[in-house]
Length: 283
Length: 328
Ligand SMILES: Cc1cc2nc3c(=O)[nH]c(=O)nc-3n(C[C@H](O)[C@H](O)[C@H](O)COP(=O)(O)OP(=O)(O)OC[C@H]3O[C@@H](n4cnc5c(N)ncnc54)[C@H](O)[C@@H]3O)c2cc1C
Ligand code: SF4
Ligand code: SF4
Image (tube, rainbow over all chains, first blue to last red; front, side):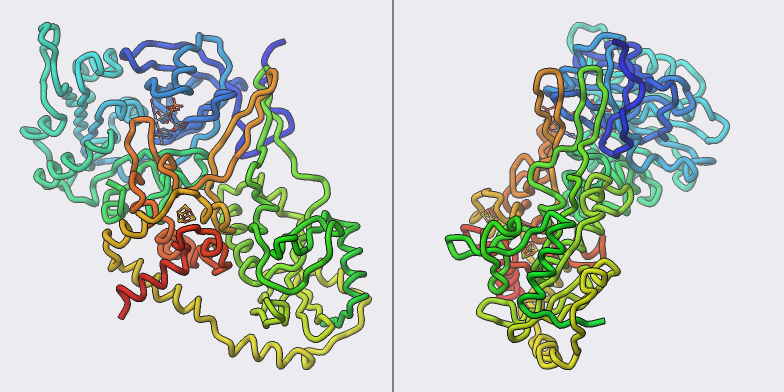
């Protein structure tokens, strides 16, 4: 029996929409790229920075950022790290598999405020997945932005996600793209920069008044980066960052993603720095 | 339109409720406490201390099936019971708690699952001289469909919604004057606990309570989660899948922010990684964060967390300690 394309008798906010896995690609030993399509053929309708709740029957749901631009039609991408039971089950799936998603949810990157600006786009580790939706959007609408800097840091060369994209971004004219790894192995196959992602900022030419910084990475990355940005003269009001927290529902009800009075899933995951820097436990 | 009900009128009202609704009424248990139970299972206990268990569980139960996912991925939602519930005998604090979570779940994006249960439900407040030992209780201030103010052997029926009005139709008229004395005594009584809470909230919000205090209080917590599970305004949940043959039942289940795993992420990062941080969150959330977000306290002083906490750090106990140590 073929999978049904629409849920029976329900539009509940908790009901996943059925979708099909079009392809799976290895990104790193721990991460894979999943390309999905809603069964009814429609676009997901997301904006860069938003996430979906991926449903696996028996294992509940996990929040995953959409890693492709809304302007790439007919599919959406998710870059997923194998972290536990649900994500391990996803990694075992083959193209053609059926999945469920809810969403898109969350406050996206505010494209209106980014238009006309120089962008300093910084990703650490897994953070390149959420940022990729914005990077692709920039590529597709290049003339809306000024200079586009892209800085990306991973632990080791093997941990670099989206290597093909990185290659294109480094070779192409769209981004001033710099990549670094914390440690490079002794085998000599890697000839790029080493050191923390903050190091990539040192000799970067920025025009502070014209630049908006967008940060997506693991929690420990933010403090040192914010110090470095302050050093570069970037105002707090011009810094946007994405905060990920444990989430169960994605719609502001389950309570797990709260930071004081804010809810990451509704008020974020993308925040302006002044909105959260004074809140306990935010950074 | 005020009505005056005597005991036989009250019985009539209860039978009318029992025909249209799944009626829950306060009844006394063998251990002396009161509980909302299906009407008729035990003797009515219309006077006494607040009911055990939060009444909000009628709309947000501890284990709450959301949907079924079939073998082919088809999704069916779990609908609410056909007969809506009527909660009889709620005090003002519990009505306030229901109003609080009504607003929370209705806030966009609305929780259709909660609203489906809540939509046709009926709330009957019971105030007047119906507290412990016949003590006077604060009025319900319109937070229910109909309110019964107990006085002498009678009740003054006050309808607050058209449904409440319809239910009171046909009963003899009552006079406001009959309960004037009662209302006056409820008005002038004041609420020392509310006072305490507001003062402590001011101190918590202005961050004058040091981390050492939270560490000290947190050290007393044994992570039993009773405070959260008992609290009618606590709405946090986790999600659980159970599989039977090829069908998955997805449910939400009450969770507790006092548990270590409440915010722990797959990476190991835990923004609430100590008992001190979690205890601060429990109190700060209700007294400061909810005020910032919703403009009201997340605690309506129902008293349950102080009754349930085995180590004596319910919200009123902690508020008193904060005030004693860091107050003016
Ligand atoms: C807004 C947002 C966007 C995300 N985007 C991505 C992404 O693009 N790619 C990616 O690989 N990962 C992403 N994550 C993290 C991802 O959700 C977790 O790695 C995933 O939930 C782990 O689930 P698991 O069942 O495999 O692991 P388990 O070992 O089972 O994890 C333990 C439990 O904790 C929960 N949990 C643990 N960590 C998190 C977390 N950080 N957020 C939410 N729930 C958590 C899980 O639901 C799980 O039940 C994102 C998280 C958030 C909040
Ligand atoms: S008294 Fe305790 S249980 Fe009752 S509403 Fe306040 S915090 Fe919740
Ligand atoms: S009831 Fe008391 S001991 Fe139990 S989790 Fe709450 S604060 Fe801790």
